[in-house]
Each structure stands twice: as C-alpha cells, then as structure tokens.
Length: 339
Image (cartoon, rainbow, N blue to C red):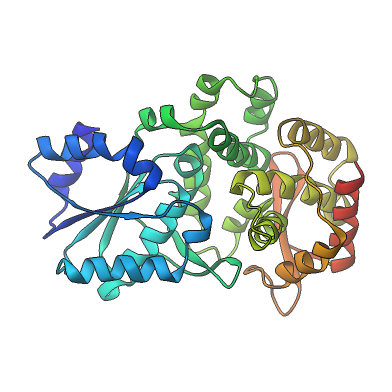
C-alpha cells in the first residue's frame, strides 16, 4: 500500500489531506493507512462516521462538511474514503459538493466496494427511507485496491460482495458464472482470484456509458427489486445487507425476465437454486408488499410512471429499459415466496 500511496501523493497537488472512515475501518484498516502515510511524511486529518447503511444520510454529510470547514479545507484539499460502499458513496458525495467539488480517492475495504461500490462514479445518500435518492456522478481521482483489508471481513460482508460478483457474471460472463457455480461458497481465496475480473466487467460497462444514459443500466440487474426489499427491511429496522437484498432481487427479476423477455425457465431455476442455497429465502409479509410496490414506483430508472428494469434474455446477455407492470412484479414476488 505504501508504494501505491506514494505514487498517488506524488500525483496529487493538494493543500490538505483528509480521511473518512467508519467505526469498523477505524479499528481494522486505519492504522495501516496512517502508518503508510506517516512514512511518506503525511499526516491526514481523520473523520470517523458511525458505521451502517442507516447513517448514509444528510446528517452525516453535514457533519463531514462541518469538519472540512472547521479545518479550513479548500478546493485543493483531497479526501481519502477508507471503507465499504457506505463510506465511498457518502464520502464521494460530500467531496463532490463541498465548495463545488474537491478531489477524492477511494480505498475500498470490503469485497462489495472493491468490485462494485467504489467503481463507476456514483455518489449519494439515502433520503426519507429511499435508497440512494440524492446523489451525483463524480469519479474518484483514483481507486486503490489493497486486498489485505479483506482479512478483517466478517462472513456476512463476504456474502454481500459475492452477490455483486455473481451479478457481474450473470450479465456479462457465462464462463465466470460457470466457475462460480463450482466454488464452495466459503472458499474466499478462489473468490478473491476473480476480484480483478469482476471489477473489469464493471469498468468496461461504465466506460461505455459513464452517465447511465443507456447500456450502463445493465448493472442494475437485481437492483430494482433488491433496493425495494432493502428499503423495506431498513424501514422495519431489521436491515438486510445490500448483497443479500440484491441476491433476492436477482431471483425475482430472473422470473420477471422469463415473463418479459423470454429467459428460459431452466435458467430461472438455475439462478434461483444457486442463490437460494447461499441466501436463504426471507419472508416479505403481506402488509409489506404494498410498501415494496411503492418503493418500485420511486426507482430512479422509471420513466413516465413506468417501471423500467434490466433483465436477462440469456445468462451473460442482458437487456435494459424493460417495462414491467406492477401485476408482473407482484406475480414474480409471489413466485419467490412460494418456492
């Protein structure tokens, strides 16, 4: 990491260096970063936010903006975001909007962030229980991948990141999907061997469509339903991890793909059987289903009141901007709950 940071410090023409971490990365990752920075003659100012998705909100952003102001951060200051998707999303948004934008660097510490959240320039926060409702596109100056950070991950964090790697395989790489199916889920070293490949898939899609005007939407496979499920459980104060919710979304949207764009039922079953064996079914109570549909109505990809999803026509071949009716969504949710 010292070598990577050394190159970066040489490239950046900055007045001050700041670090955003959370309670977890403060304990497990910040010491390594500070040791590396000290040896480079740098002493960044550190802001620690509360950990967890529920803290990815405007209140935390305001606290970070205040920290910048109190320390006289100017437009040549640089923010290092040391953490998972919550930290990279929120830190990127805070940096992109402070004094109309300061540079920031992502140092992702979770599998999910390394293969997904830190890549692509999406920055944002949750608002009124709606996930990622406020945000912008702003790319980091650099993304530094330091895989030893993964050694501190809890099993649930590995599970969450693997869901995004599975998504990348399903939308773009049949061979990767076939490799994953033959991994034992707990064999983290084998999954780690695919991190660069998974990240490359996202980078390739983002490069083709940086502002998500078209093709980049394929990355949303599993996310329309998944974000709605995640929002429901957040509202109930029984949060699901992002990856777990996306795994549920991929199953339900696989069935929707069968209804809408002809994904074979054998492929639907293949996806469902694999995912449900590692992400056991959660119950969505009848009282929550109206809320779930309401969250679908708020999805950012919708157009003119129509729900738009990215769905698979085949494994490895996605379609985007597929119109899905609320009746079809309800049918797919019922299919998932009855399996």
